[in-house]
Image 1 (cartoon, helix red, strand yellow):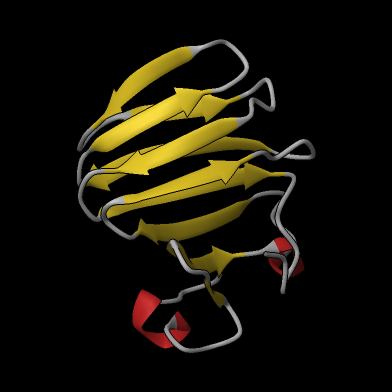
Image 2 (cartoon, one colour; image 1 turned 90 degrees about the vertical axis):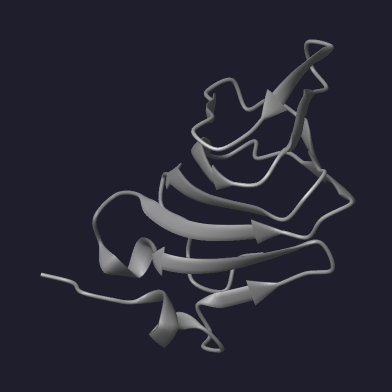
Length: 116
């Protein structure tokens, strides 16, 4: 059994900070469960281009508003609390944060420790 809190992850090597976002990696590949779980916060008034060619990612937004731009299919989706999106086709996408976004992300295969 694994029990962790985001408080104990904060400031540890399981927290990755960039200019636009912070990811607290709650579960990683070294936990040997086949997926990873992250709490990610995105700064308000930012645009973040992302692409995960090696992962499938499910995202559940629990706080904030913005847009998800699907750059592969020329679509824009509104983001708000309760929105889920699944990048099952490895889509190139952009997150436009109108306010601070907080989301939980599940990756498969699991992200290894230290990955950006």
